[in-house]
Length: 638
Image (cartoon, rainbow, N blue to C red; front, side, top):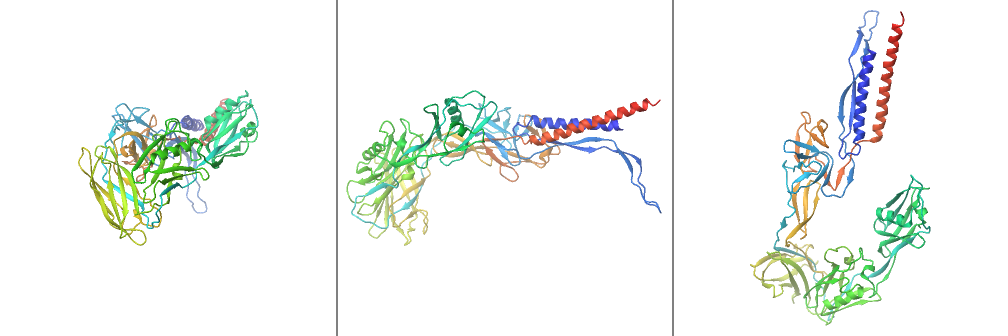
């Protein structure tokens, strides 16, 4: 029996090694779920039955000899794997339970790996196999990336901001930038050690950078034993970091310069492991900080501390606002064409605002706009990045506010772009004027060359003593653009007694049209997958649209699914009820876009199990050897 028991044990341990080998082979396979082997003993040979106590004699236990071990089951472990961020929008992972469903036209298969994309017909497919992906209704689906989102005419507009309660005058109205424009220098750091630099072969030397107080960025270089030039070190740093620039300085030193400038710009270096520290090898100091001072007319826009990314020739700075008489001012300052300095931008503003004087105060670094005549004025100004270079400068941090109100009847003007039924844009101008009884009238106008206003007035806008709007809280205007039917627009001025719309405080005027529902036609520019599996499309007109959705399938018993290769599973008789729906719903996990789930194999644990299986195999092989020796001894007795 020892031969039989040992043979069974050898087979069982071999199966265990097979399971472990498969786990280790798939330790880098996305979405792979590790398996475990479970064992059970075989029937025992009973040499003597158990006996019950009788009289003066006690009972005895059964005498049994085991017949060995068997592999009872191989279970799949469905624990969550870590997420590997890929940045590709249609790479999907699941955080929690569930599977993505795909079909090859014959059967439905399931996977935790969402390497999805579109084929030439717009079908959503698994890029690894071409299998079509299922949505939450269990059907395949397509996405039309060439679809043009049709325009929508403006039908609603809402207002917010303040109509001034107090008027002083007569004065020429003046706007001033809320904060001074500062010219800054970048944070710079130069290493004290010159190249070449040698890192021993097989060693990895590291250091970390913290730029502008952000997250640490690690740089690691694998040594070869061959001396590296300063240019090679610079190339390694540039490839592994961002927000600053590394260059080669005099004497083969390393020079670091932050992309931002000013007092908030900083470079901090953190040493790596002792004896393998790049910081000390390069002779870098601990900390460097930028400086800033009042900007002058000769300061380049790229040297302002509000600059985030340098402008290139042809980039535009958008100018929008209203001049003294309320006429819209819409212009674009083109960098490298209209100028490059803060003084040239100021001159450009002075030209755009024909009824005002725009100057840069060299002592304070602030730009001011002053009406050329005293009296009621409706100046407003907003500066922002235009075109495709949005985000190169934080102009909003220095917004323009009224510092001196013009005298005369309180009159506030604002304007807003709207869209007609063809998707063409027009600018409506809204004039608020205080009446003798303290109420306000609102009049709407458009350029005569574009059409006419059929009904464009709201009379008697009043406010409560606390500054909240009283009545009316809205109204309708009707405009007609050339060649088109009349267009009715509903105006929302706020909630009676509330502060969510127009107000009348003692503060300066700040009325704006904060929203309108029209837009021009647009093309699909990008996609994003939400937590519920919905595919949201972003269009060039600023609109969004749900283009489709990914279905998430859950099972009562996920461990009973049958692996069919290729990271796919198939339902079985014991996997239980299948539920198909959206992600992050009921028991289904959350869909994470731009990521893939990694294998949940614990390599360290598998190696420990491998040692156990190997020892078990060796021990039972030894049993065979001992039994063979015993039989040999018996044969040799005669």
